Image 1 (cartoon, rainbow, N blue to C red):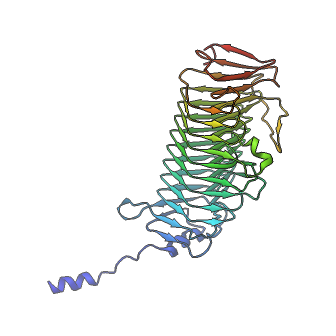
Image 2 (tube, rainbow, N blue to C red):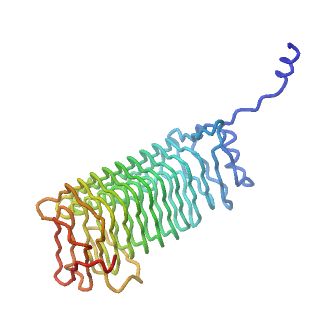
Image 3 (cartoon, rainbow, N blue to C red):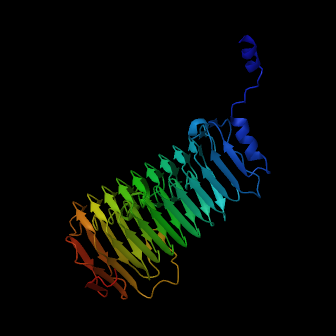
Amino acid sequence: MLAFVCALSAIPMAAAYGLDDFLAAIHDHNVSYHEVKGDVVLNASLPIMAFGRSFTLVGKAQGGRRPVIDGAFKEGGLIPLGLTLRNLEFRNFNGTEPIFTLLGHDVDIQDCVFRGNRVSGGFGSAVFVLGGNLRISRSSFLGNQAAGQGNGGFGGAVYSQSAGSVLIESTVFRNNQLTRAGGLGEGGAISLSFATVYTITNSTFDGNRVDGIGGAIASTGSRRGEILRSSFLRNSAYSTEARQERYATGGAINIYGDNVTVITGCSFTGNKAAGRRGGAVSLSMYQAEATISGSKFEQNAAGRYGGAVDVRLVTGYFTEGKRGVTLFDGGPPRSRLSFCRGNTYSRNVAGTSGSANVYVNMRNSSVSAVSFCPSEPPLTLIEAETGTVTISCAFC
């Protein structure tokens, strides 16, 4: 027996996975795939990755546990050509850059957690994608924060600009914030600018906040967006700049100049816009089509108009406050908004305007139309000097 024990002791034990292994993979330009087999705590800022390669990081800790990469309040800033992340947690990064920045290349994130990360550069504490495609599945973004410089910012957790496609599915965004933006920030959790197409499905947005527009999601100038079977709870838009407070719209969602918008099978509960409009959803449309169906709006609040939903069908040169918007060409020849079957409204509030549920403003657009199927909801206010209003299911 003693000989057997001695033989076992002579077998070299595998070295524990650690920081050196992780950094070696990042520094080695020949490595494109790496398995993270244990927790890592950085002792310096995340190094810039060698250009010219895509990179895949997969969590493979013992027992199937999700490894943690702890930024220890250091800087992020990894810039690969393409990025795939699987089964990892990123926490406590704090700097001027997002953890990951992709310029014209694709990002695929599955089964990951981003927790408690901070960025002072004004956008996307976790991920920034310029061009390329973005996919996020079965992941969580918890308590992340992007801080602006008093004059705007984009996405408390995720910022995508000019993406080909964005797909976010079965993902939780909770308590993310875009702060110190002077009332000009966009998207407490996610900001999407000029996407060709985005789809957000089966996801939860809870307690996200923005100093500006879109407590959970803000989209500007995208060609097509679909938000499906998702829940929005207790998200809010506010302004730290008194002059901009009236424009703090879209407590949960703010959409500005998208060509086609579809919101189906969603629930909106307890969202709030401190500004005048859109306690849950605010849409500004030009040569655009939007459909809202099968969604529940309960206990949402806006300062004056549209406690649940606010829509403005505007001219092509629409400007609000300091915020102008460049709109895509190529939309439909006229704007059309359709409220289809299955929407319900309960205990929403919006000042004394009489539009606790829905507010539609078509006063500045002579080629706009709104339809309700099967009927117009109570506490709806429509201002339509030249637009048309119909009770019809033809467009649903």
